[in-house]
Amino acid sequence: MKKLVTLASDIRLNTLLCCSATVLLTACGGGTSDTGNGPQTQSAALTTSVDDSAANSAATTPNTVDATAAPQATATASGNFELAGYDANPLAASTEEATAPATSADGAPRMLATVTSVNTTSAMVTTPATTYNYYVAPTGSDSAAGTKTAPFKTLARAAKAATRAGTTVWVAPGTYAGGIRTTASGTSSARIYWVSTTKWGARIVPPASSSNNNAWDNRGNYVSIIGFNVDGTNSGSGTKWTHGIYTGGSYTLIADNHIHHIARSVACTSAGGSAIGVDSYYHGVLSDVLNNVVNDFGPAGCSYVQGIYVSTSGTVKNNLVYRVSGAAIHLWHDATNVKITNNTAAASSFGIVVGGGDFYYTTAGANNVFVANNIVYDNQYGISEQGKTGTSNVYKNNLVTKNVKYNISLRNGLKATATVSSDPLFKGYSRTATTPDFHLSSSSPAIGRGISTYAYPTDLDGKPRNATTGYDIGAYQH
Image (cartoon, rainbow, N blue to C red; front, side, top):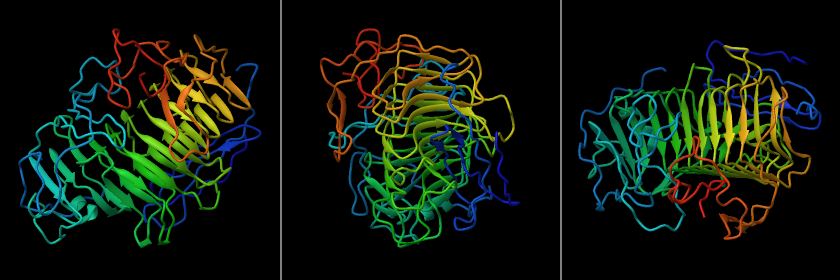
């Protein structure tokens, strides 16, 4: 293994540098800097060949005026805070089997966050009551009280107010400048929620002059980020984004977001990037990445920029990831005990990479990783173990086909079981279509071929998965 020199600063945000590689392709994802415009701190790149044979600084004192009522299905002159576009089922357990829909494995309350289609009709969201509530709308003012009738204007201002456990920030539809940082933590019984009241209605874009390389940098624990549209299509001046939503906290939830068209024109360097980054550098554990859509991320041909990048424990479920220059889903650094189920990964360099290396706190490698019910289709590489991996990883009931270099390459003598090797027969797939349709056609071989273990109780559209409906492979239930 070839080790590169690591440069470190006294204050840094982990670079989320994923560094697994094949002799043909090195896949690395970078992270954000503390200042947003300083040099990236990076760990070494791991160069190995594929073994086919073995196959917080505290935020500003919060505003003292709160609107304690939860959103109602009404609009105000200052912003529309009606909840729309969400399925009516609450989020299920995160890191274990979905047996307790209202809570995570640690008892934290979970709110509804299953993605439905962009043009879905309005549906109410089940949310836990929180003690403090703030509101943000494009027509608001940062000198206002942050109430429903006098909302803030920017996410940055709301971040200064939302510093207490048991807080929800309700964000009305509209366009907001990104590059924000949230540092406050909730608790297991009183999370901090950031909610786009209309799914994908709150659109986060690069500011006119960007000083950060990320849309959202979260350092808090017990924080949920739900329903935002992170759109990097039009970059202004300054630092270009290479990251969508990053979290260095524990028990965080990133759900229902659409993160797209970011880092398309940046230089391809080992600093890397990721659409969703879940990091262990600050000892983060047990975070969930659920029901997100990630597409068109990273410069063409660059293996250093990833879709969903995880370096700790947690879950990756019901996500649709396509046209990512690196890996659609990538585990690295201290990643272990991760459940990866019912995702669809297509048209990227790698489909799913499982591995450990460039360790922060442990050298155990990626172990106890459960990979099932995923569609991995039309990538350069399919499912791949890289770096250091354990003997307790499980690969079951995945549909893996038409990946150019290979479909599955595992280590330590592991074998995938019940793999489906047929075309998934999506309703309207195209590598180049603006919005390919990844729903399953009625004749798809993915229908009914999944298993119930660690399956999320609904699909990306909110359709139920259970013994009656059957368990389909991929992000969508037929």
